[in-house]
Amino acid sequence: MKSISNAVLIGAGNVAWNLGIALQKVGIRFVGVCNRSKDHGEPLAQQLQAPFFEDIRQVPANADIYLLALSDSAIESVSEQLPENEGIVVHHSGSMSIDSLAKKHKRHGVFYCLQTFKKEAPIDFSQLPIMLQATSDSDLELLKNLALQLSPNVRETSDLERSNLHVAAVFACNFSNYLYAVAYQFAKDNNMDFNLLVPLIQKTAMQISGDSDPFLKQTGPAARCDMAVIEKHLGMLQNDPKKQALYRYLTECILNHYKN
Amino acid sequence: MKSISNAVLIGAGNVAWNLGIALQKVGIRFVGVCNRSKDHGEPLAQQLQAPFFEDIRQVPANADIYLLALSDSAIESVSEQLPENEGIVVHHSGSMSIDSLAKKHKRHGVFYCLQTFKKEAPIDFSQLPIMLQATSDSDLELLKNLALQLSPNVRETSDLERSNLHVAAVFACNFSNYLYAVAYQFAKDNNMDFNLLVPLIQKTAMQISGDSDPFLKQTGPAARCDMAVIEKHLGMLQNDPKKQALYRYLTECILNHYKN
Image (tube, rainbow over all chains, first blue to last red; front, top):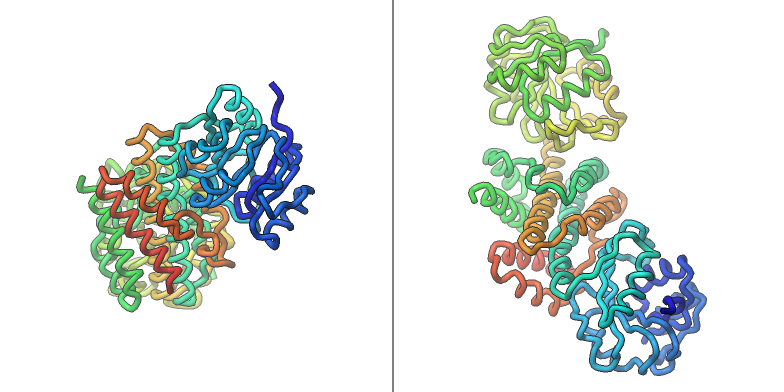
């Protein structure tokens, strides 16, 4: 079985940039970068030393893999515009079924990297979990060999497992990042140095492991059922009703957790 | 001016254990550990090679500092039971005013370490912000010299600044830890390996700095206004109404953030 050595990358967003650069580093040759906007696509094609295609119908049909690094809503329709080809067509979405690629491309799969990507800040793939799906054992093997070049943390997951993981990631990461942003805003509004909070934020996250319930590490006024402090904090937030409501909501959640 | 070289520690909870051990390491001699419960207090006294006192009226009156590592609600009343003495009486609370110690002890102050403490897991003080208050410049200087032995990150803050910081810490740390716990529970309920999420949780926290708004790093379905994924996730949570309501609430917060 021939391994994956060259690729076509479709898309030029956060995932496309990060995945493209990471795969280039492990020796994958990009034989095409395609994006509907030239302004966004060409710089990535240059970075990957690949020809740029504005029209998806022009991409080479003989690549080993077609990486559809697209928003969820675009995956199905773009995959149908992609010409029939000799490679495996994969998407990188946490939520979309593998079947969203099934209509036109017999060899298709999922290559989902569980991480938060920003174009401006290329990330280290070396500890990153990569979740794979394919329609045949041989394609799964090919994807696995590719993924293992990026990270040792590779596994096969079903649509449902991947979706569940995505939901959990929204709670643990997207929502906690939002809370960092709320704290940042509060600090700014009160002329406070947000840097003071950074060690505590990082400690709180670094002490998390899969082996124990994070709730065992819960501290703070709600965890102590310290109603006096809670009332004081709500009072301090009275000029900022949205933050006050958020504080109240999450405090109730924590108090309820203990009641149950 | 004589520096602080010995201390009495009152309390035997998470803060007392961590602060006691950290101060012992930098050479502070404990001349007494006092706690209303012998079972909890004696092991700490042993650890700190200090005599144990069950009755606060018996603690030596000639220590340089009296550390009231107590819950907020106990600080005022316990400080009034503490005999008059030659040292500085301090508390370690994020929320209580320095004045809560004023009634009996002329020399009093605040020694607030912004961190989440668990007895079982002694923490590294070396990067930890320490916020100080005192009633005289000379006592502030004494506290500063003591704090600087633990961390270079020491500053004087007012009651209001300290309270604000505490509110921000509740958002950024207590609430985000709660979200880790929700994700953990969800993972467990769905036979998912929570370890898969750990790299993403840690990356999300480690990329935070005081120099840029964390909202600029916001990713996920709500940040993309991806209503299809949001609806899908809410559907997946329909058998768990509390998590569904929490997902909906925080998603609305993020969507609203973009509208404003």
